[in-house]
Image (cartoon, rainbow, N blue to C red; front, side, top):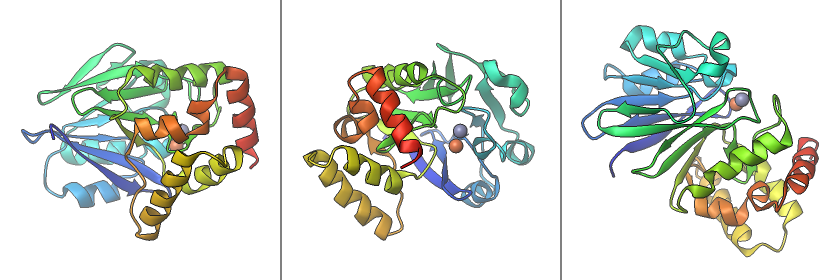
Amino acid sequence: MPLDIKPIPVLSDNYAWLLTAPEGARAIVDPGEAGPIFDAIGDGRLDMILLTHHHADHMAGTEALRERYGAQVYGPRQKQERLPRLDHAVEDGDVVALGNTQIQVWSTPGHAVGHVSYVVAEVPALFCGDVLFSLGCGRLLEGTPQELFDSLHRYDSLPDSTLVCAGHEYTRSNLAFALHVDPENAALKARAGEVERLLEAGRPTLPVELGVERRTNPFLLAPDVATFARLRREKDTF
Ligand code: ZN
Ligand code: FE
């Protein structure tokens, strides 16, 4: 494994993602609070803090982590004024380095203005914040259905083996909705069993392979933006 990747549960249902490169450099994606990350790192090092978007549950631990570890903070240029002070404002097409590991920045609006995703092609892994969840997708808080649909389909170029490292453990409620709209989907039924086993054991349902999501996630299976928009509306009140 070129890069070690671990979900750290923070707040009630968020995940911050801890990345450790082979030579020891470390990054945290979306630290919604600092305490659990202090527990995970202790007196070790933290080189980078990567923010996907400006919602508090993805960034509120940033200043405390920067202060203790001296980590450099990266986040979207477009919503800079709503983020903690950035050492590096990033935008679509940028590549940042964690040790020898390259991390690509992709623009993925729809849930939030300025939302970016981070892609590590050599794993491959996708840090998608609140764009894609297992069996679900983000709410349309600051964008149009077309924007979020296009953002989800930017991931089409990634291989099936890509590890989806999302910002929330929403899989149980997403599963109920997915089974409601697609009850005969055999791959979905198989994933349902796996999700139940993981949750029963108190384990995260993430990361999940993108190939699994392509066969089971109703929002990725939606054939067009009109269907996608209808599903998103329906899920909001499900
Ligand atoms: Zn959010
Ligand atoms: Fe969130």
